[in-house]
Length: 233
Image (cartoon, rainbow, N blue to C red):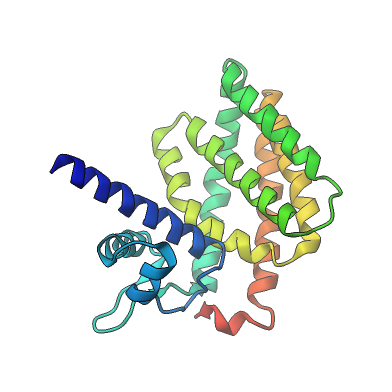
């Protein structure tokens, strides 16, 4: 029985991770209905772990549940996006400031960031294609993971981790502006370098600059021609 429960939980976790990734990256668009039958086919899982995954995604605000209707991917509101970025501007510069202070005495953290810095350098000047997009997505997600993992204040780290799926959805929208991606590569290089150098002020300033530019890119995309398909007031 314990082994069966463990196997079921593992399958539910896998389905949840896959569906969350698909929502974050736009495979399932805001407002799209999520049929249990179609999700079972999509994930190769039975309907029970699919239901569990949907419940978890709804608890995170990524899926909307209404009586007698199929679950839907939550839409994005301008007000909600603005509120999220206002909050990020409050907490993330302070998080990277603290991580930069920690890096001075944490060789493992520095090694992880040096490897990530190399990855960002290899992306400099590379023309956009699907391979570049995937490398960039993985590198930026890894940067977010490292910051959340090494933020010494547990409440601050938890807040950042809770924002990650919503930030990822908005980041995907921002990446619709492909002309900005190289700028973002350089911003991540600046943040990684400042943390590795143990320079808290430079790390916080680089994060503030990055969030300002991402904010602008997101709202340009949200207010573009296809905004009506993903936005709610």
